Amino acid sequence: MVRLTCLLRRKPGTTPEEFHEHWRTVHGPLIPTTRSGSHVVRYEQHPRPLDDYAGADDPGYDGVTVQWFASMDHYRAHMAEDDFATVWADICTFLDTDRLEFVVTEHPRVVMGDDGAPFPLA
Image (tube, rainbow, N blue to C red; front, side, top):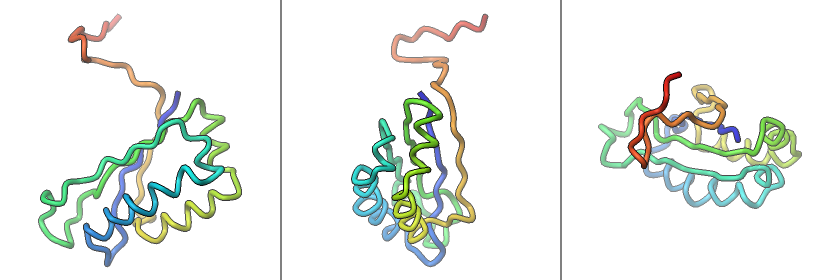
């Protein structure tokens, strides 16, 4: 299992409310309707609370998205689908793509978890 984690900033001139509305009601529902999205095992949106913003020009991140894939091959296939262009076109309508930051990671090593046991260091 691999995860694509993206740190998101809204497009300049877009209010936090506009950003979050588009992400929730347009972009989120778009993913599962595409062949590109068929490679995604899980799609999470972690929105920044609206009451955390100092103002419309707040320079911080607006949210985090996490997409899970069965393997790197599935991740690559997701982006290779013809309709990924549709997903990317929508991304360009509400995200600042010049400042989009992301990382692909493997399954996490849990240091602390639900059972309270520490992660073995050896």
